[in-house]
Length: 534
Image (cartoon, rainbow, N blue to C red; front, side, top):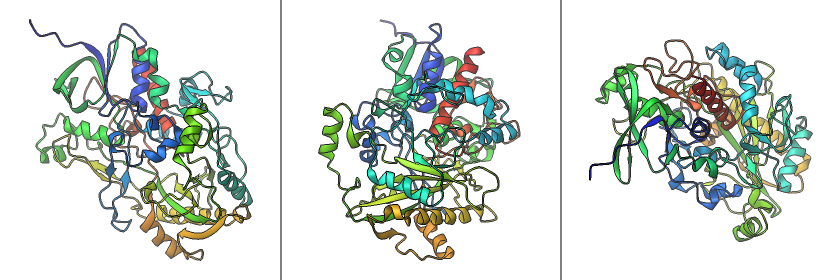
């Protein structure tokens, strides 16, 4: 028998993370368009991916995690920092803490001012609203009919409520909607959950009906290694599965949605990047794009930990009891917790404008080294990060093989005037102020990190260098704009070639003021509409 002809696809989407799931859903809604969605990781079938508190069990589960590490960080005592990224249907939205945060209007107005025309707050707000299915209902800032369910937590640990009270005692106002008219204040996070289960991008956008569409093919376990080109136009993707290597043509466009690490790596392996770096790896230069891999930004985070004198945190909670509550009693109890239940936004005395510049996530458990280092006893953790770091890093190739992880140089605290370090010291200071309030008097035990309450600013700076970690928000490595170092234009088309777009966190010119997942989904919604409109 003659070989069966290869299927013809209009669009190939590389990466089934938050952006890829949105694009697959929106583009395949047109029955005349054929879409192939490639994901290097597995399907999202594991129960811990859907039980919110399962996040604690995913920390060391490498089958759903790219398990990246940075290069040694010069300003952080030469430490390599762990960067978990989702490698599963839904991407990082399947393993994150589910906090739904957009940032503030000025963040997006800044994007537009930096050359991302069409991405100002007034222009992106409709796409936030159309993606959002907020169980509180719709208003001028929120949507209630979108695929991504946003809800209040079903269960909140009493220590998280102590944090909210303590932060108010420290002077922060109460705020029950960080995506409302004002961001500043303290309260409980709204989360991407539906009926007590995680609502990842895969749950939201690749529902049963979408997955059953005859014009949509979802291929998991498929690692893309190269985009192919003819006469300056993207023509398809080379990828491998357990069955072998394949070249799949695309008749319209290739859409890269791998995120701030994988997307620039794939672009460079495909011949788009800094020409000298590509030639050094023996790669043919398709287009000299010096900005690919640059402009890397992330939120650096410092954790302050205390012992608790009562056994009411999650440290020694019974896994069996939590699972019974969740699976046998209709998704109830601590199993519905996102762990980072409470938080807030604080404007420090160093803030250059009226935006909050510090974000807090409170965890009613001891969390050291991302939870990988289990501490004895009971306690609680306050994360604090500086929202608008000035330091910039880069992603570079170490070889011409997709199997070799890219080199991540975050370059934390490398800004010329040292402002980022000053802000991280401020993060540590406000954390100690909040945790010293009377609300914690009934359970406060000995300090853990830092081990003393009387540190000077210089000692706090040393503490930051020794203990700060990523809070998982890498962006910017394929920045959109119109200048010579921008990688994509405001329509997210890669400069210098045709038929290729980047649609993920890598296109952000700068970090928004908060968690990044909502912004990635917004970007994909807006991009999908633009593609469909032609």
